[in-house]
Length: 244
Image 1 (cartoon, one colour):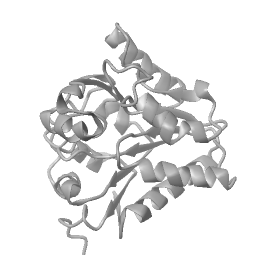
Image 2 (cartoon, rainbow, N blue to C red; image 1 turned 180 degrees about the vertical axis):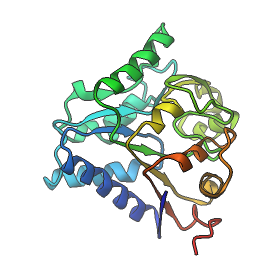
Image 3 (cartoon, rainbow, N blue to C red; image 1 turned 60 degrees about the vertical axis):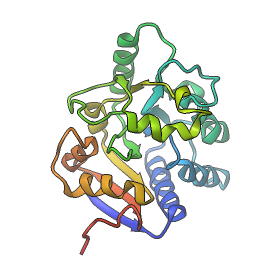
């Protein structure tokens, strides 16, 4: 696990964007695993800038998003489909047929989840997976106590996650209580992983992820076993680490 500590959010975003762009430049038909939330917004802005400067081409890239709220339509501004279109896909030359995001409106959840994993396998797996981390250590929507053997599945969201995500909604009551999430097992099969975190609120989760015991109560701790993980954190998120 490689740890990169940067001064601020902007520097974190640039480094992450450059890593994603490098992956696509080296392998134009890369399969990217993508995250949502506050943390990767700056990274997506930087990627768009690189695209507009003709430094990266997304025409052959395939993407798989980590998760989607269950019960929100694509048109809902709080859906992750809406987020991805707004923050990245509408601004680069990706083929919409190569975009994969779980469908939160399906009736047959089990079939949707199995087919999602099947599509990932069919394209050869994820080359580069971008992750954020929750204050409770979740990656994707894999909450504490989740099985490390889980594949894509329906998740009951943790109270801390609902509370944290309520800032995006008019009220806490509007936050969905379930989501479809790529599972830990699926994430761990990615060839390379980038984990992003910034701010004091993530400091404990980052410390436990890197220095704590591997424990389902801290889902991100499983990343200690992955062969190629880069953690990019600002000084606040890294404040509890002893890197000397």
